[in-house]
Length: 496
Image 1: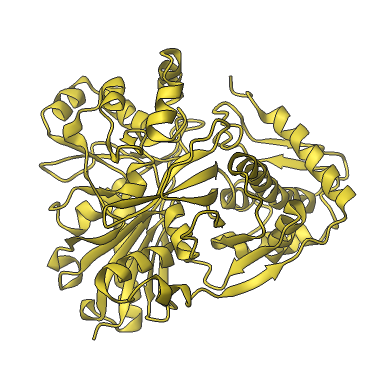
Image 2: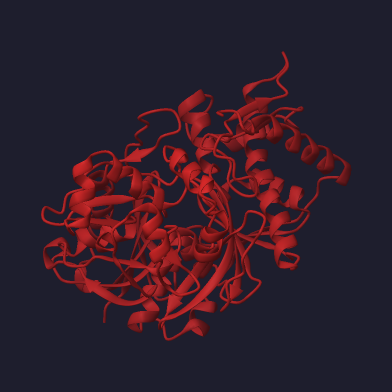
């Protein structure tokens, strides 16, 4: 009997592969970073071949390190950075340009054009999203605009569009499958979440030929098999979900009202809303949480663009730490940030502000400010951005959060988790398995193949890995929040 589910977790800065056993435990994992490309200020690109090569290398490595073969793998689950856009040549299978990453702001002018045509309400009503450079639709339009021949080729059916799940499955299957799961489709600004189909109006507004689009499939279900040459044997691809929806599933948040936050490159808070979409008027996104057996489940989401990436900036940009893990000790070496605020709007601000023109700001610096104060203010910024979204989510849904379930790479930072509990004034509960994004993809694949019998079985797998109770005095917390709001006001609209 095969022993594992192989989860492929293709993230913004690294590609990870994890083998999960029947207890939902990560048996082994491998991660490989790949280059970030910054062609201009506010632009972010990835080489699609680097995405693929890092992902397949990490998968092969994790199998080799455990002595496992393809015969030991029941199925593959895929989870991916969302919105990142790849267009490739159907004949050659090669991308026509670098992928445009979800963080990239280069399509702001296209977004402004859509707004000037009065499409805000239409986009929100049809797709559940806002008009923003974050989403895939305007990225496709930008790629086609770079060469008049591309539009002709797209209309002739020669070009294919996909998000990263589509790209990986294209490569894994030797080009045989062109699919996207419903959770990723709901992040393109091209998909009608009410009708569960590609939206003809949005395609027309952005002049994107329908022939470019992948087939929309369930999040859990066998959709394809890998080419036997990839792993030595064909393996079913049976689970697919965008990273944040995968984390929601991996946290066991399957019922209306359940809420989680994932701390990765960005920070993403999702609240399950059941079998009906809830449409926000104040900056939350409506998204598909999963689609199983053709039946969609929905969530509202608050998207924060920069979270763990701010810690990477301390390491790579400022050089004040050598590893991300050092940020906790450096920040803990001072009792407070001493009035310093870091607003990490490196790629604009997401929810609840949705300001494409905001830029990163450090406020409150004095002669006594040290690297430790900046490090602590950076951790506080991650927690305070989360507070902004939770406050809005509670107002929009009318449901007060009793606790926040958390996962992702940054939750190993105990100081950050304590700051988060302090500013929220609610407990923060950390999953024992920090990589719940990959675990969610594994669950989806395992449910589709009988590796797990049902949700009741996998619900018993979830374990707490720590609970943080608020301890900061209310007056101190309120002052911290007030200063944050002032600093955010300084960052807004900077680039315009």
